Amino acid sequence: MRHHIPGPRPDRQRRRMLLDTARFEILPLPGGAPNLGGLPRGATVTVTASPRLGVQATVDLAAALAESGFTAVPHLAARRFTGEDELDAALRRFHDAGVREVFVVGGDTTTPAGPFVDGLSLLKAIDSAGYRFDRIGVPSYPEGHPTIDDDTLWSALASKQHYATYTVTQMCFDGRAVTRFIRAARVRGITLPVVAGMPGVVAPAKLLRVGLRIGVGDSLRFVRGHQSVAKRLLRPLGYRPDTLMRQLAADQQVTGLHFYTFNEIAATLRWLEQQRRSTTREEVASNDHAV
Image 1 (cartoon, rainbow, N blue to C red):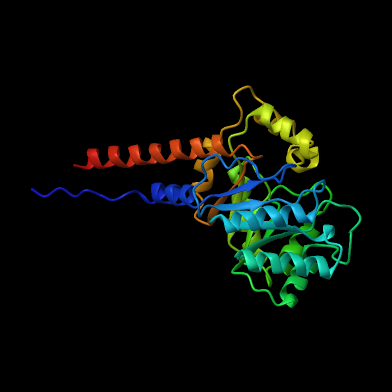
Image 2 (image 1 turned 90 degrees about the horizontal axis):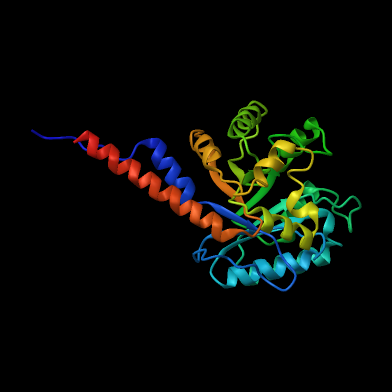
């Protein structure tokens, strides 16, 4: 009698795909690159724009990562560029270093340092500059923005999709909010692939220490005004994204994961490996039961 041994279930395949292709966001710090915690060469590492350290810190770190074999994705904050000369210098450096992807944000600075007042104006300038990138990402906000109304957010995202190839959501603790956002985006004619932004495994002491070093706005702006989020982040054992991972993996329209690591990369990598082992055990158990 022949026994059929099924392959991995689609939900496990999706979970493994999302785990294996995850992106890791890091923050530039004074004194050089953070400890990448054993992150394998070729992994996608995004480098945020720091208001304290300026544009050049992001440019230098992203170029160094690309030259070391990582897929580096610098965050370019429109309102922090002083003008086209500074933008051209950054784009030329990326081209020379092999950076093939950028992530364009407006930036939290109230007063622009130059002519770029928002992400769309910077996207247009990049498009006109002559340097071509394989992928260009833009942010989106499933749970809104503290200073921008929803209609403006939707209009901006619709305008940006002509220049962008994907969007990464603001850090979210509820996968259902991401699902609702994707459905609403499709209704509005926004077709960009959606990468879900989620917190990595965060140690509270490290989170607070990094926040003090780089300015609270860089690392804690997501939890401002949300006490439930703060409690989950700052509980004694730190935050673990297990439930959120299951929610996001169940949504077929989520095309990737973007981990906000707060430079706590090693802990997040350990969690990812545990998730991979758990998925493998589920697959083995399923096949055993099928025989």
